Amino acid sequence: MNTVPCVSVIIPTYNRRAYVQEAIDSVLAQTTTDYEIIVIDDGSTDGTGEALQARYGDRIYYEWQENQGESVARNRGIELARGEYIAFLDSDDLWLPGKLEYQSTFLELNPDVMMVFNPMWIIDSQGNLVIGEPIGLDLVSAPIILRTICIENKIPGPSSTMLRSVLLDDVGGFDPYIRYGEDWDLWLRIGLRYTIQALQEPLGYLRLHSNNQWRLPKKESLSKVLSDHIRLLEHFFENFKQIEDGFGDLDLLFNHALAKQYAEAAFNGYTQGICAQAKEWLNRAIALDPATWGDDGYSLAQLYNRGHLLLEIEREITLTQLRTFVEKSRLYWPESLSFSRYQAGKMLAELCAEKGYRHYIKQEYRDAKWFMLHALWNNVLYYVDFGFLKRLVISLLRGL
Image (cartoon, rainbow, N blue to C red; front, side, top):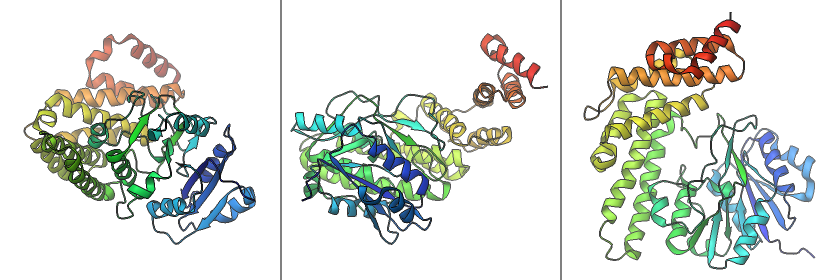
C-alpha cells in the first residue's frame, strides 16, 4: 500500500539530460525521505527519458508530453501530486540537503503561512559559485508585504519555494499563456489571499547558463517579456483594487510597477544592443515614474549594474564589445538624462578593470594587462589605486 508523501517535488524539464540528473540527485540527497519526485518531460529529444529511467527506475515518476511549455508541465505535475506540500525544482537548479526538511517543518509549525521561500545562491553552467550574495537575502525573515513583490519578482524562482497544495485549488496553477513571469503571476495571485513567508537561510542554487533567460533575456524575447509582465500586472492590480478598498495611491503604485518593467526592458535592450528601442522604453519609464527614473544618477547606476551583469554572463566578452555597449548606450540615452563623455569613460574604465581582475585571478595575465591598461587610460583615478597598480605590474611582468 502506497503511503501519501509529505512533499511532492515537481520537476519540469526540456532537453536538459545532464542538468536534470544533477537536480534529481540533489533531491535524493535530502535529509528527509518523505517525498515523491514527479518529472514532467516537456517533449525532450535528447534522450532524457531513457537516461532517467535507466538511472532512477521507480524512484521517480516520469511522464513525457508534447512540448507545451513549463507552465503546462508544472500544472501536470500538480495534477499528479499527492503530497500535503508542493516544492518546485527547475531542472537546471539544485537544492542543499536540508531544503525540504527545513521548509516543511516551518509550514507544520506555522499553519497560517501558506507558502515559504528561501534565498538561493547562483552558480554558473559548470556548477561554480558566482561571486555575490544569494538572491532573496534582502527580504527580511517575515511575511511578505504584497507591495514588495508587485514592483518586481523578488522571490528567487520556483526552486526556492514550498507551498501547501490545497491553496492551488483556490488560486489555480501556472498561467500557460504567460511565457515569461508565470511564476511571478502565481505568487501575486497567492499573495492576494494568503501569507507568503520569507526565510533567511540559503537552501539551494540557481544555475545561470546560456539557455536560461532569467537574468538577461535574449534580444528577440525582450518585447514578449515586457508584454507578459504588463499583462500580469494589469490583472493583478484589477484584483488588488477590490481588496484595497479606499487605498488612495494604488494608481501611483501601478505606474511605479509598470515603469520598473519598462526600465528593465530598456536596460536589457542596451545590454543586447537594441539601443533605439531601449531608449523608447526608458523614456516610457520616465513618463510613468519621473521621480525614480528621471533621476540621472539612479538610471545611470542601473546601466552600470547591467554592464557588470554582461561581464558575468558573457565570459568571453571583448574590449570592442564593452566599448560598443557603453558608446551605443550613450548615443541612445534619453535627452532628459545626462550621460557625458566623462561618465562614459568612467563606466568603460570600471568594466575594463573588473574584466582585468577576472582574468588576473585566473592567472590569465596577458589578457588581464590589456583590460587594466584600458581602465587606466579611461580613468586616471586608477593611478592612485595601489591594489589595482600592483595587479597591473604583476600582469605586465608575467604576461610578456
